[in-house]
Image (cartoon, rainbow, N blue to C red; front, side):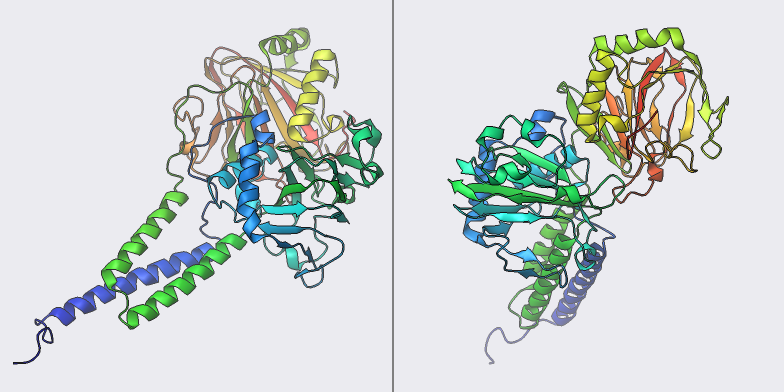
Length: 532
């Protein structure tokens, strides 16, 4: 009698072949998904699946002490001597220009990092996916970073995500003396900052910001027309006393895909290793299939953004809510007080006349069925209340007060509307004064009982995932995004993409008013100073 266990029932090899075939098919499907990920056809969102909630501006701008300590703790075991990027080869190299230690955290590395990156996205109006991973830096006494640009002068470093358009510098610690961030090419009265007397000699060589734990410094490396801004040159002054910990987030014009590519390569390596082990009969098919199921479920959960907020109550006053990335659109809830809304309506009422439009090719004003309502214009800085509102808009959009036109105040009665149109001009007219219309701010001065939504018919994305879908936000047609007027709210949307090209998804209109009246004030903001 032969040894036990050497003989198998008939059909077992056929069953094994069937299992192997199923496993092979799953591997092929997974491999195909990973190829799509690497090519950017699919993407793995790096933000957390935590439900998005409106944020007060203070909570967006500042980090808590716990968050600062968390980033430092996560970085400490991996700190190495800092390097700079060679503009010719695109590779990192040692340099006396930068004498510090640093490390990079993965984008979306943990819940704390995800929360910070989400706030940065809401603060800058740029998607999480456009950001590089956080860089953590540590400067000891005497260490510094000489003045430099964050934008690139070579093509190598812009292949993935394009140019670095913005930088967010977060201070993770106080510094007893020195360590300021200095902009030596900044224009204006640089000595007017309240901390001038506390600055080191290095800090007084330009516009300087003194490190303060929890503060975030945002500056733009590119102008609104997508050209590099030489005045963004900056450096880190030597630390004189104490230590300086900071975290830098660079944000690109387009999606930064390095993380996805790395994930792809890691998956390929792990799959190859697993297949080799399978061939050597080290792994059994059932146990490995369970691992694949777990990982695929994680990917699907991230891609579908499972767990988004769908409640409509408890909205925080003066909160900011990103409602779309195509177009880039944000609502600032309760931006205006009731008194401010009533003031604008009161000073506009005596001057209202039938609405007209400007032929964007000819520059001629004409009556049309395209726009039915009543209109008047206010001078920029017309009175103290208007100036106060315009200053807040400049602070909110990061665009100078002088780049904005005066308010256009509109009233729509029942049945009146404004058909979809772009705010950027197609011909030369409208670009003579201030250039292209970069952004539009719509201030809702009244509630509307029914109808009157601002609609973006070409908006992209799963609009029905928005909070309050059946209430505050409503689809006008498949694929469109609508915003329901609410007294005091401000809608900001960008008419150009980060690369400076007009954004056709910003085409918008005003739905007919069905019941009640609609009062709005519109502010158009240009690339340069507007003479209007």
